Image 1: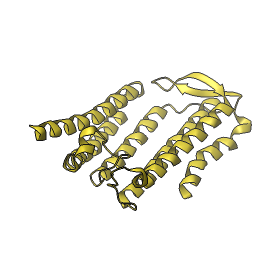
Image 2: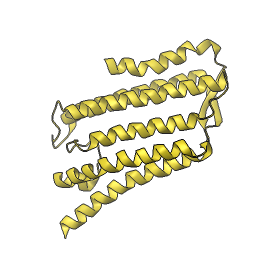
Image 3: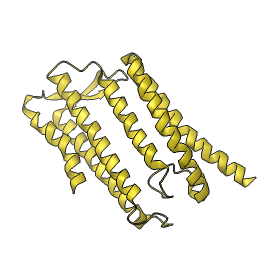
Length: 215
């Protein structure tokens, strides 16, 4: 119930701005966070509501995944999964809130010059939190590095997640530091490239472990 209320905060904040927002608001931004598409403010409200429902649905799946997990590998009341559900709820609700702030600042006030850095640093902190949790995640179908090779073997799952935990924590710390230093217009391409790399490395690592065990 409390997670529902948290996801409602950005929606309620957006509704509080309703009368002072123009009829059309930015709904899409380019890599430098300049708006390049506009829709009605009602459309944006719908986007926020859908995002909130996705957050709640993702959290519920993380918490209750054991009931639909065919292998029943996750404990029904796993504290790590509980923490993970809260991390997902708080951080993505925070991104929703930042979207509303960005809309307000573009339509009513002067845009925040370093807004893209705030978004990407927030996302990096989100991945750092997931990295800390990852080393203790038990095999499951809904949270973690879910490749055919990690789901096939509990040992590969454990080794992959121990490795991925270090990669995600330190990789995102480095990524955050670089984003703070470089000019704004480079931060988006750096962040996207960094996250692709930090995701690809654990996937490849799990494949290498599987290939080594198969030989």
